[in-house]
Length: 481
Image (cartoon, rainbow, N blue to C red):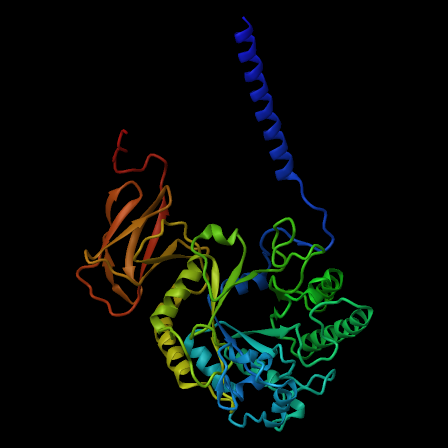
């Protein structure tokens, strides 16, 4: 009897413990931290400006400034880091680096030429460094003398560039580094009263420059922030939040990524409740998500270099240099996962683009001329991923694109559609007369036969799909196990 009673008591205790744990877990899952300076919106923006950004597909990044002059070398020695960080190298004095302003004279700079290269490449937006970490401004800012206006070149870079790209139908995003190595009021952290006084001046300087940019270049669509990871800026949650509000009020529709500010607990990109701060996630630098779950339903873009980690001009590229086909595969992968792909260029000090970049831009552009329909306005398709390449759905249509990079030796491309989706038509985007008859091999599963094609370049097959009722199927029966 005692034994039976003991068993009952143990069972009741276990049941109570499970119930208590479940209640505590549910309470913990639902509990959110109250934030003044966290995310002010949950989920994606649905306005026209953000829809336009979302549909870009392919973008260009341009890193250009004083660092293009040394090009990753100083006094005959090669700097192993990214060229635009050379000012931080122990071999370089800040004064010697800052004196490069007197040598900045890009007499061959032709913004129409740059824009034409981007246009032929198929670019829909460009991000240009107005000011990198070194503090040198490519526009004639009235809040510092460390600008292009005080160089031998003297003329504004940003204005003509915005005009030239807009003329090509390409939108412009303005890159701006909060970190400013040249400004004496910049601090990496704030530890003393003097630090606080200096950084308050720096905050006003930063506000002035950002409002100046938005006022001078009213067609710019957004701001791309960098240099926001140091404690000094991370601690400015209230100020940065207020400044963001001010900028958005000045420019309705302005697009700002997740790097700009932290919440009051120092969390960046995502606030302390895990919600995205900003209009899109900027955490994908030189890396790409593996699956749609990795982006958590957020807008995002990937910024990518051609060599492994060179943004500004480097006289010598080291490490692996990506080919056009590699870059096209990255582009397709990004768009297939609801993102944009942005390829970086580092112009030379004379204002020209290096030959390697122009060659890659042409190769990408040649492919885009035929296949751009698969990239622009593309989104996640919901098809099961296959090893031959990527599925991209055209937003608002019944078209899904198979962007094919790796043809199986069998010549058979497996396609597994979402439930209740059937393929009505399949054809080659580059040759509309080339059609395919999908072979249904299982429920929602097909083979596309390539007719012994041996393509030398990535190509695209268009699937026009329809919906079917729940009763649709081939009669294939699942195995009984």
